[in-house]
Image (cartoon, rainbow, N blue to C red):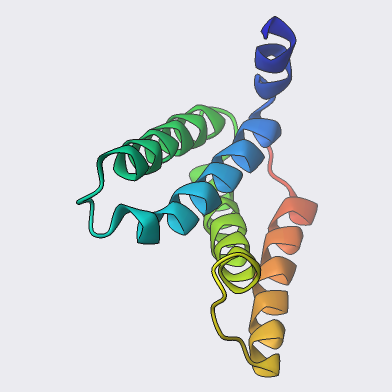
Length: 116
């Protein structure tokens, strides 16, 4: 467990983990049935809280103007893909163009980098 925390201490890994947890809570929302089901709601709220804590920790080092769009991009892309693959949401080929634009923006922000 200590090794996991050591790995997550890196700001970029914290940011990626925060984005993954955003996907988790987004995909869990339908199971809460409007937060009327206890355990799915608990899991969604826990994933939300953990995602925000990791994002807040990451922005101590990574500028929010870089971290937040990357967090949103991971969440939006992951929620779309998970919605289609796991939840059976409908998709259209044109959606892939727009998802590619989101991914391109996230990759671009990471590639440009930041100065601490």
